[in-house]
Length: 465
Figure 1 (tube, rainbow, N blue to C red):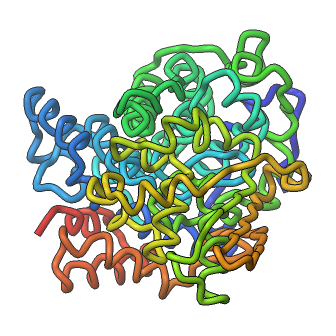
Figure 2: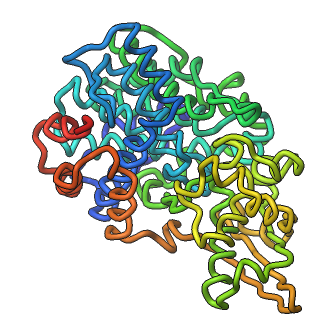
């Protein structure tokens, strides 16, 4: 067990990360690192075809590609590691299928893995070091999110994936690059001045939410590179009077940053998304699908749908109601609970095939959305954010009423996707990008990542066929 000192949270985190080694990691935690890496590569590869990703690629081309640089997943491009991290983080967040930690209410993979891939290639590091670095990056990212409190941080307009993710990304880069304790502290201090990201990005068909984790990954690389060159920064960036915790929350819980360091790893408490939308929609969609499948409810029979939604999720997926009931773009559909409910009822799923213009423009979908209402339920708040429960009530035209409550949506650690189900998700996402042979090679190499002596043997496979 790591012993917390009186030197300060920033120093304690750096000391813990410096002295943590692959050999000390539990086998199930190592397995989770590989599990989430496969998920990340899948969502990043599929995100490479999204319009917002292509704009970032155009910018990188104009700045200058680097044939010897880091791979941009799902493309034939390579670039300097900070630019590759930007591109890969943005693409992985663009389809809303990246992993989530419930307690911190953020997406850790999209800021940590872009750095592991980019800096890992630069350093030609081995698979064990990548696993080690990513596990620590997840820990720092999630612990900061928990310490801030999701409702507090979101309430101030911040995007915790971006803000907390910048610190995790820095740890990944610093660990792979072999920074010493003083350099790692400086790197954290540097990135503290770069940690940003706003939830105002949900309006007006903006693309900035997709970019946020990529920018955090970019900044994590830059912070570590600057620190290695000797750039100095605050050693109390997390806990200081004007530090990250006090800036990002009115009621922070600093003890949550270091509580249980080394006793448990947050990556093991992280979720996978099966549906192509905001995490706050996953539980309600599962509840709808449970009712439909167990009771053989025909969509034409549905008269009314009442969904119990977590209070923190209401501003993201329910309000303003007039806008959420009439999505006009991909991001508006991804964050519309009425739309997610409608396609789940009509098509029995809410995957990428449902999040397309033909669906949100469909008269049938529009009509079903008018039958959906969302309410806050105090009962759901009792265990939040450790649990993200949801309820669904479906009333039919012939007077029947069906109810379901979901405490652990599919993909949660308590209700996980198996490796087989994860591989199925990966194959489905990457089929347009990689051949079957390429997909099989990626899967096998990631499952045996600890045996890779040079990570570039794996990352080369991430280039589009």
